[in-house]
Length: 479
Image 1 (cartoon, rainbow, N blue to C red):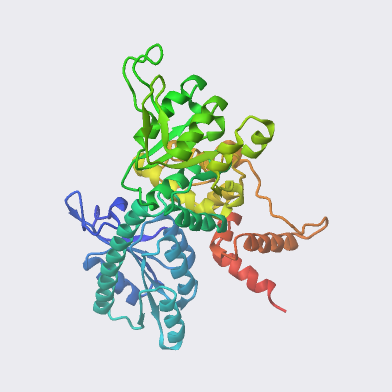
Image 2 (tube, rainbow, N blue to C red):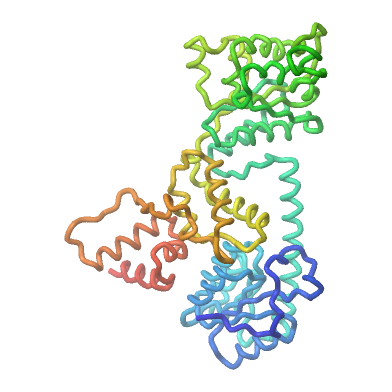
């Protein structure tokens, strides 16, 4: 059922305007968008009409299933819903709306018999509750106060987000246990002068760890200089690191500073440090230990104060045993070692990263894409990502760029090798000869278990209504 829109034609708020508190889009006043979920009765019609006259863009649906569809598809500022009536579970609806947008201003309409449940709704995040019969002016006053609070919270959150991006773990959006441990290691090592070796597979985010260490260190106001040793031809690695004097080699028409000099008082990040030639490793060891070196073709000794962070996807211990890496340099580099796990070992981070990349690339590509459907996120979470975060980021960018429509990315927008994958549920209890009713129950129970009993996500994956799952589960639990 499509929502009934009540308001002046052309008055719809621009989705991109949400959260800035400006109240104006291209010279027009932004009308806050309110979803009303109430049965079609005369009091409901009066409420919807009064909201429209009071300056709100109002969407009206009469049942919970239609409300879920609107919450998924529409950017909302507020939700007013019946707490408990036929086909409407207001408590559950408020939970789903706040999961989609934590700043949604929620108001539940209750009767005196359900005051305890209304109080629980407020405890779970609803802004307020009102009793039948509804006082129209009071609802508008509460709604205006709640939206004002919403804008203030949004502004504070935006400020905090900008501060976090500037000062804390720049570029790292993770919450899995391995990354919480890495965050703690970053905080601890950042204040020291110790060299740090960051290890892990290609694309796991080793460079972001190095930047976060620098950003949290006393050297944050000085240069962070990065060099990918694996991308440099063997003949110019020494010149890149230590610089050269005029005439040091053919084509050296002028003296040039190396990366060590450019990083003086700051941090030098040597990526793919396992690819440095043996001949250059000797000079690198001296520079790391003593802070001194000579430019290529020069005799003057330069002294610098540099914090060194190195990274590699190679096994330096094995290279040491094979004689292709100097032991003294190896032990000097790995004073502190931070091991970055592959993405397949941190699957709980994937939804967070996906949301971040979708927002980033949607903004860069005109903002037509507004998010991603949960069922597509589940497919992304199940994939092993051999290229790790870099592969995931490139995948999301391609999806956003190639999406043929506005709105949510979905399974159809996934790359072909992902969209064809079948979701594998470990421990499936299928057996030959099961009835269709037994298969249905198995599918519902296994899907609920896989998504942590999130009924909405389970319904999305199974392609059925949330109310159907509630009804079936209630049926299964009957003695």
